Amino acid sequence: MFLYGCTNVFLEHLAAWGGTWTAMDLEHVSISIMFFGGGLCGMLVESTKIRDLLNAPLLQSSNAQAVAAFRPDQDSKSEWSSPKTYRFSMNPVPALMILLLGLMMSSHHQSSMVSSMVHKQWGTLLVGFALARAVTYILSYLSPPTSLLPSRPPSELVSSFCLISGGIIFMASNRNTVNAMEYYDLDAMFVFTVTMGVTAFLMAWETVVIALKGWAVRRESS
Image (cartoon, rainbow, N blue to C red; front, side, top):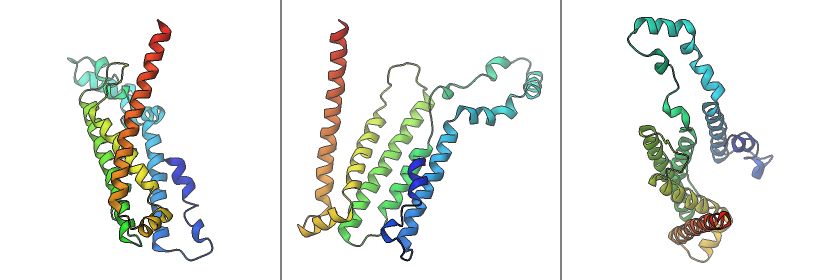
């Protein structure tokens, strides 16, 4: 996300290089800047060194001694140990960026009604992904994982479906594809229904392939 944003800031105007900047150009550059800043913020949140620096004022020996003196009946060692949520990544910034992108694309003005509806479709799917990912974060926060095996929250299945289908429709929302749809008198629902079927089949196929890998590993070990 960070690399996309920091590079695409300088590439958004290539299609009209030397020409005047339009409102749509500025919108696209703003989205790139959002990904630039959001990706950088996400990496800072993920960094354990940055987290230690943020906790440094609270972990000074003088502060810890003051709290222990104020509450002598409490176990100071357990109070100053890392919380359970530090054991896994809980970074809402990428989901927030995708949510904002989905809201932007859902109302992004296009040159034709078909193009506007296609953009609204994949924008809504990106919003659905962000909401499902938020449910995953809530479940993980309330009950942090304790096993090395995947917990498989049901919300992640929904988020995967929304992200895959939204990405496919996003690739189909380019100008040439939309022009071909209008030429052959196809509406936006055609792309939506075909994409839903393809996404469901791809997810089923991926599950089968991973299961076959597990079967092969078990067979080899025996």
